[in-house]
Amino acid sequence: QVQLVESGGGLVQPGGSLTLSCVASGSSLSIQDMGWYRKVPGKLRELVASITNDGHTNYVDFVKGRFTISRDNAKDTVYLQMDNLKPEDTAVYHCIAEVPGSAGSRVRYWGQGTQVTVSS
Image (tube, rainbow, N blue to C red; front, side, top):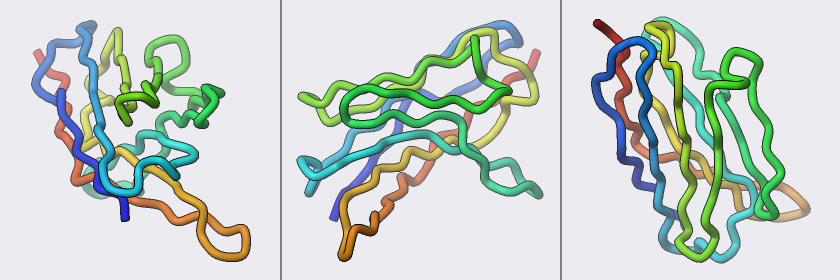
């Protein structure tokens, strides 16, 4: 079992910045990929960015050049630096972590989420 706790959300004006953090506990030594998803009411949950345990990153197009994902394996923490925020970035941001499952599968854990609101 892995527990994930996010922090760092809040209200920010358009063009502003926020840094989200997510700390893993439990069976954190077995974590492979980590990442961030976001959920807007009425829309499907969508991937924002992901990072492997050796630092390879992946971003969706709508955040490239604005968001940066990083992780500190010694602290079992993944970060999402969000710059030049736009109103359409308003969402609940959820942290995820994946650990090996049976027969080569992956088990994904989710955090409770942190609200990000971009508004003037």
